[in-house]
Image (cartoon, rainbow over all chains, first blue to last red; front, side, top):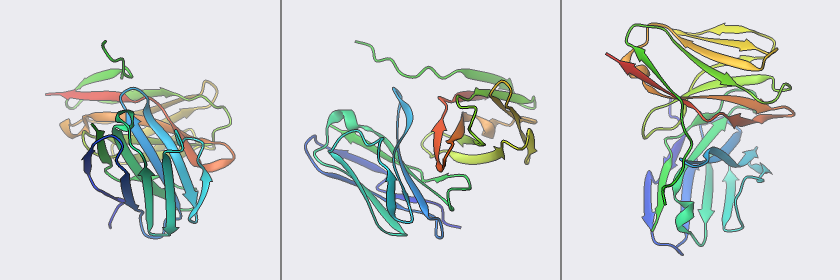
Length: 113
Length: 113
């Protein structure tokens, strides 16, 4: 069974550039989550969607961050403009109906120079 | 200056021995708990979950114990193997939001030969 698929796996870009991270949740899952993981702060929830609708974006650090889920099989997390402090590993996770465990992708390692 | 990151507690266990990883959770109203395993370069991987109406649940080589009185969760791994070396996270749900999880800081398990 295909798990959560994230792309790209690695991204290196210069500050000021727009960065778009992509996620394909597990087929049939209707909840999707974006997390950020750093050594300083651990694993932080940025935003989550239920049935393609954003439910809680209180973890989104600034207006530079935005997330969309245009359909049940695709979501994006965008940073514009990017800054060096955005460097982290970004994970996407999905779950079924919010009742079961979240399943994670292998993340995008983002480096902003 | 030197950056300060999260200090992960480390548990060293000899191959073949049993491992016990502990977690204190914060919210007495949480009713769903999950253990995840994270290997280097990968996303957190679901191991086992437990609901608050249970105090013990067993999987393959793993057992989760829940003590609601003292808000304590533990993961027991039987006959620990080198492949068990990873960082282990506990997570609790946010009551009223079945989907939203709060993660602990993690424990690094090192299996020695």
